[in-house]
Structure formats: C-alpha cells, structure tokens
Length: 591
Image (tube, rainbow, N blue to C red; front, side):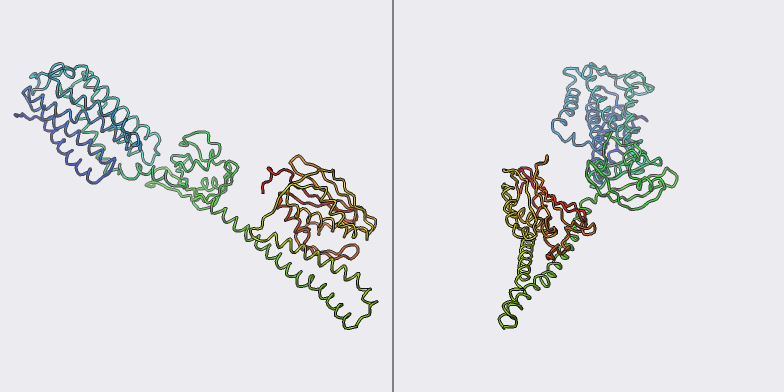
C-alpha cells in the first residue's frame, strides 16, 4: 500500500492511536460504564485511523479496502454510544435482555456485510470513485438505499442516547450538573457535524467531519473523567447507594426546594400529589412538622425526633439536619436524613407497658400477701383459740353458743376471701385459658339470687330480677357467675333493712348483653369510686360485714378477658348501679 499523508490524515491517525492507548488504560482501571466508554473510544479509533489512511490513499482499490475497515468502527459506534448512555443513566437493565440487544445489534451486522459485499449488489454505495479535483485524492461516494437505512439507525441511537442524557440532566441536582454538561455537549457534536455533511455543507470538500466530531466528543468526556470525576460514585453509583438505603434522604436548595431525594422518603409522605418531588418546597410535604421547619428556616443544624401519622399509623423518625455551602461561593444546601425508629420506639413503649404491668402485679402480690398474713390468718386464729378454750373448759357451753354468730361471719368471710384468692390466682397463671360457651343468662342469675337469699333475708332485702327466659350469652360461665356473685354480695353488704336490689338484662346493638344490678343502699363516695377496681378498697358493710377488697378487681379482670366491660355509677345516700356487658355472638369474640 502507498500513502501520501496530509495534515487531516495525520491528525486523524495520531488521534486514533492516542485513543487506542487511552482506551486500553481506561479499560484496565474501570468497570461497567468506564469499560463501555473505552470500547467506544476503540471503535472511534478504528474509524479515525481508517479514515486518515483513506485520505492518504490515491488508488480506488486501496480506498475501498480502507472503507471496509472504517465500517468496523462506524457501524459499532452508535451502538456503543447508546449502551454507554444506558449505563451512565442507570438504565443498563434494558440492555441485559437478549431480545433488546439483538434488536439493536442486527443493523450494524447487516450494514457491515453490505459494505464488504457492496461490489456484488451496490445496495450501500451505487458507485465509488476517486476525485482528484482537491488538494489530495478523495473518495467520491454515491449513496444507495441501505446507506439511508443505516443513517436512520445511526440517528435513532444517537437521539435515544442523547434523550437519556438530557433526562438525567433535568432530574439531577445542581451539585452534579457540571458533569452532565460535558456529556450533553459531547452528545450534540457528532449530530451537528453529520447533519452538516449530509445536507451538503462541506467546507473541506468531500471530507466527512463526523469522525473529527466524535474524536472531539470523546476528548471532552475524557477530560470530564479526570477533571470532574465523571464516572466516580457520584453521581452514577450514588443513586443506587441511596435507593438501597432504608433511611430517607432529602437535599434542599437555598429556597428550601427539594433538588434530590431517594425512594425511601416516599414512605413518610401522606397524600402524595406528584411522582416527582424535585422542585417541591419542604413545607408542602411536611406542613405539620413545625420543629423540622423551624430548624430549616433558622438554619439550625441538629439531631431530633419526630412522630408522623401516616395512613392512620404513627411513625417515629430521627432527623439529622446539616447544612452545606459548596466552595463558600455557591448557594446553600441542606441535607436531611430521616431514620425510621418506629420498631425501636414501639419496643420501648411495650417495655414500659410491661414494666408498668409488672409493677402493678407486684403491688397486687404485696396486697395478697398482706391479706393472707392478716385477714385470712386472723379469723382462723380466732376460731382456733375458741376451740382450744372450749376444749380446755376455759369457756362454758353458753359462752360458746354466744360466740357462734361471730364465728359464722368469720367463716363466711374467710370462705369468700379464699374463693376470690383462688379465682384471682388462677387467672394469673401463665397459659391459663378460658372456656367460652353459650349459656342461659337467666338461669345463672336465678341460681345466684337463690344462693344469696339467706343473707338478703337476714337484712330484709328484696331481690327482683327482670330477665326474659332464653337470654343467651357467650362467655366463660364460671367467670360470669363469679362476677355476678361478687356484685350481688356487695349490694347486700351495703344495703340497709328493707332495701331493694333490681337485676335487668337487655340486648345491645353491638351484639352484647347489658346486665344492670341496681340497689338503693348507702352508695359509694367519690374518692372510693375512682379506685373501686384497684383491689385495695375494703370497706365494712351496713351490718359491719367485712370485705376483702379483691372482689371487684377480680370482676374487672374476668370481664376484660371475656371481651366484656364492667362499670359503676353511685351517689352516696341514694345507691349504686353496676353495669356489665357480655358478648352474645361467638364469631364477634373468638376465644
């Protein structure tokens, strides 16, 4: 081969050789996007060197051979540019699908074969001749149909790649825009030069300026690599790192508008009106968070906690707010990190609740031990002493008979106390279950009235019930029996002679039965009414009957475990009304 080199040819050849060296260095040092950039540099180098040698050739056969070499770079360059743009914009998932890569690779392959076999069909160039009119021989090419097909493909891939770059430029924050400016300028240079060549504006005769433009574009990107760290983790991998983080991140400009954020932030925003928050003022997404807005407006960095109500759920966040001033000359930027502490906070609340419950149980335990050591021991000791004195002859039979009513009351009191203690203790056992079943409420109430008739008759108290036959409820029957027994016992205890106790039952709309036990006894004072279910309100009755203070505490716990309620209304000197609700439907209250 014979060559007559000129300034254009030398420039292209030197630049092409330099591109090969740089491509090799970049390929070895980088991964993914950097390697695709180096392969694109190699393709442009092939085009550049081949075109430089073509401009140095004078024979038709040599020019045709070199055009065939050039098209190895020409056909692959738009494809490599598009792939590079996909990786640069984080859209590489698209190219990893076989169907997609085949759809954009088939045109370069066909074009290369068309150029190499053009002398047989002339579908790419109708004719190739040598023009000697210029300062040096150049190829005079007449285009054929497939040339325009490839040109369209060339423009489509250039356009798609450029569109991705522009979109990235629009969505990126201002901190990274210097990097994107370089790629956008580099993207438009080949467009301009090739369009100028295609429309016939050729200031240098038949010389195609497109390879020169591509060379200059690659030079710009290469400068960006080392001047602006174009392919460092910011901004390419930065997006991926932030999206993988569980914490929410926001970057604000000096006017408190959002210029960058990650997807985790969206979990903390209710009633999101737009899919893109860039440009939205921070007040629009957190209008109720006065503490956060105050820190931002006053330019106060800090670390503090927030609680948000998102979709009827409380979210607890830790906010870390810092302020930046890039190079001390640009606008201020604010960075907000939102760390979700909901799980930790809920565990803390649960631990506090459990600590409170444990404290309450310890108090109840102390109360039980006090009752056992005093209230339960006292009557038993008294009975033991009386029996001992009777056996020793210290007291006569008549004296013993006079003590029998007192001993009877002590035994009844002790029995009630033991019964309540046993029921309460059983309910506190871990794993203790309740046996829910449907039962006839009227029959249970009648049985309890019959059980209390002797004590009621002794005080001339009248017990009336207004409960219809067939009233069915769904609960643990033994627990409900204990509750009604305790309430009836208290009613009798705090009634004077000739009082009246009325028991009623009625269905409610929420699938529950409301049972009221009303008396016209002495009533309960306001102070004692507040603590009546606490378990420490033992008061003697109208006939000096003793109480344990445990009964109503047990009643409250039993009703709650059966998905029911217990409440009391009372006025001193007028009487009291205890109200309990019991489920009637198994499906509404599963065990």
